[in-house]
Length: 186
Image 1 (cartoon, helix red, strand yellow):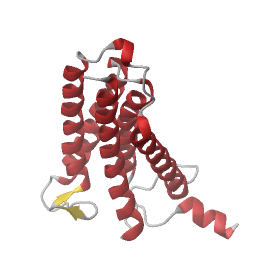
Image 2 (tube, rainbow, N blue to C red; image 1 turned 45 degrees about the vertical axis):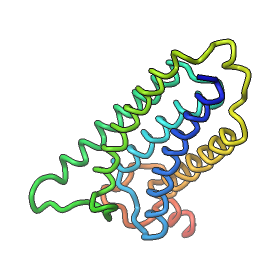
Image 3 (cartoon, helix red, strand yellow; image 1 turned 90 degrees about the vertical axis):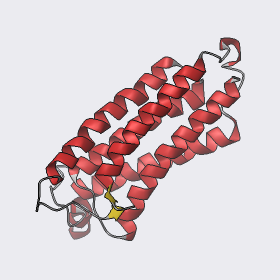
Image 4 (tube, rainbow, N blue to C red; image 1 turned 180 degrees about the vertical axis):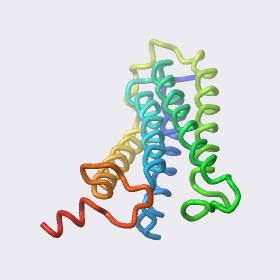
């Protein structure tokens, strides 16, 4: 496999992480559903997984980049599993809206497992990437666009988290942007 094809596949993986974060972000602003602390941590795990793909887009595929994606996805699996376990008890109800009939934390669990499977496939395909061609491309226009989108989404999520949580702990059941409200009162 040529290095450009490997980077394109990594850009698609990065675009998948961006799509997940964009859907969660749109539910936050369109439906007014503020993410709970576990949701915020799962978003951070998606961002960290995306970082593994971003490194492969920018610098070429390497096992260490895939290691970042896998370890971040494993952390995400633990976080999403914890939230699924919290809401699996009868009569406790779920948290937030559903998409395709599943709550976001359940979809996140599925997505983290899928990310590990995708990275495994990329690792299997990487054996065919010739090392001498890894630096021949800089990711191309598509890769650069995916990188720019990823950076913007991560910065927007960081800003919204800071607005929601302020300088302290995030509320268990958020109802408002605490730091933003405090700043507006100041």
